Length: 145
Image 1 (cartoon, rainbow, N blue to C red):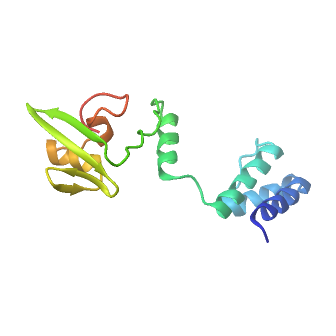
Image 2: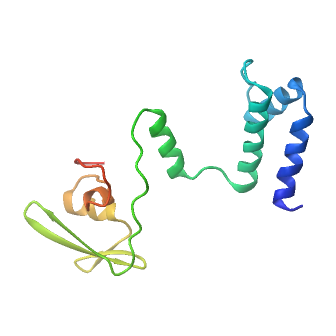
């Protein structure tokens, strides 16, 4: 059955369920009973979301991290800008100038290949940094990640 049809079918099932049936479906989907105060429409929406996640895959790790940060009261910036092959990034650190070349497979510093800017920042500083932050590609400033 086509994916959209499966989800539409599940939505049709949920629409005709009464409260006890929705509570049972919730317990099956989320492995715990729903709070008593939830509305039926909220339970239907949560259950269809669960069905979509199971069918299409859930949230990406980056989205989960951003949601957790937002829930914790932290500001959430957008993703680091895409860096195209051929881009050169320059950073001065402790009086020394570093030039990094972006390639199709990662980054090159002094002829050595790195998978990420964060790996380069670690190599340069000896401490864990956000690579995009270290090279000034994100709006957040400060030391360490």
